[in-house]
Image (cartoon, rainbow, N blue to C red):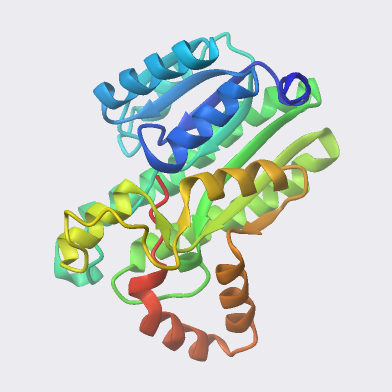
Length: 274
């Protein structure tokens, strides 16, 4: 555990930390000796998690309630982390709660996804990677989705932003690896998180009282375990044997065939990446 802190540095910034994968990753980092800056919209959830992690691990934990789709979000994050030697960045905000055709409503929600999933992670990676390169160590993990591999109905903006995240992160891996910085694009399929459960309840496909594990879904703990195990390898990790096989089979088809396949399976492969 002490070697993990020596490899990456003292501070971890975790975007989307209030629940699900982000909260589990925060705990994993604290257990490995890192201090934390937790980012999410819900201050109460962040405060509760921070108190638990302080008590359980002794980590120093700071919280910032921020909507990462807002124009001043990055400025707020930079101010909250000023002077900290950030050696780990996890970006897992950006789930799509709507799952509707692009033309079914106003364009503003899609633009908010664009800011949250593209502009903000780009700026944060640019800001934190520079000092990591100077120190010759650090780690960046960006959660993306199988939805970003091909287009699919009801996810036009979401899938497009996740494609951006995937390509951005793979390119950063190629650029930063020679400087000692580990970069990983973590590709999720169906992931059993509170965000996905809320979305399924809204769609009428899950009973609110049903607490059984979602069939075929990865758990947040499994996602975090694969992230940590594969962070030194990069540039890309598909989470779970089922998703890896699904992606392999898609890759054997033409893009039009793959789009049609993903359209048929879109309900079951949407990632709840927060």
